[in-house]
Length: 429
Image (cartoon, rainbow, N blue to C red; front, side, top):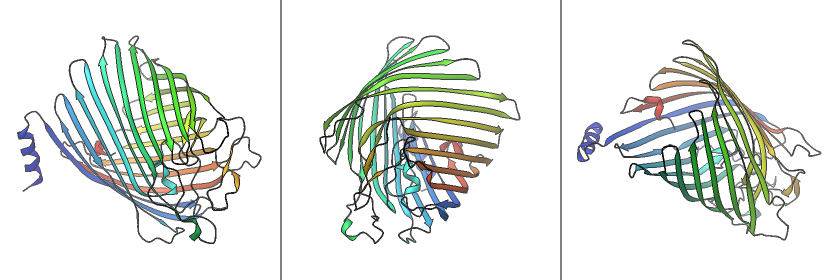
């Protein structure tokens, strides 16, 4: 039976329900320099290929919708420390459900999962946030599964309240027997703790005017590591969003994290029981015409960060800058730069990720930049090329401060996505 016939039959079974599917993927080839593994002292020439097929399925009615995505990632890097000639496979999936229960009440649920093998150059696919410290390993076998639900109610025309709850689990997929490590003392697979998370939150939103929105969020999060580190984080954050003009808007947030150490593997006291939280950002269209559009973003933040490798909760500060140059309808060029560092007075020492267990200064600073240029030569296909740069460093006040673990890549990617609704590239995850 033809696939479109099946979808038509499904729609007829439930009148008013739209059924859409999409399929495609991204093929990327890159070349540049990077360390053979995170602990290598120098960068060397590298080549890599990433193949990411993508599939999506959506059911939608006037009151509810379901969206499912699956996009596994196959990655080859040459040379690699384990001399692998097969791809590293990372399964990635997500799902979302939204339902207007009544005219005032709504329900939203989001789930995400990443399970499989990942190269150290792509840890952002399994670690949340920006991870400055890297496991000193050739391949990371890891799983990260999370879910979050929100129940919202429209109290009045300008007032909205949401109650949220969720959790997750992340950790390595295999055990490491360090007695069989190679001569260089670097494990083939990383020893990283497993963590179990649970959280609850309340969010209040008030539309103060046509240009101003106010938001208050309070929450509590439990983070339990397999290394006998158990944290309880209470947070409250106040936010204000303002639209300065038709082309410029900004956001300002402030609050605090209160961190409690419920269980510890040693008697060392918690160094940062109270972490201030602040965030400021602005977005503006600097120039706009039918032929050229230029927009920019800038932001700075200070927040708490949960390090999944060392099982720490510490303050982090950083900032982002971005420019986007568009030549409608086909061409877009972007420049994005990010910098994050530990917002502590002094560097922290931690055990090395090697059998020796030597105390070292681990990376607490990250610099990253990217220049993607995209040409959408069809509604369902695009060509992207550009460059990426990443470098890490110790704490800004460390005596041995210097940039290392430098990665510099040039790349080209072909993106193709077909959807039954004709949206094409809009389906790309």
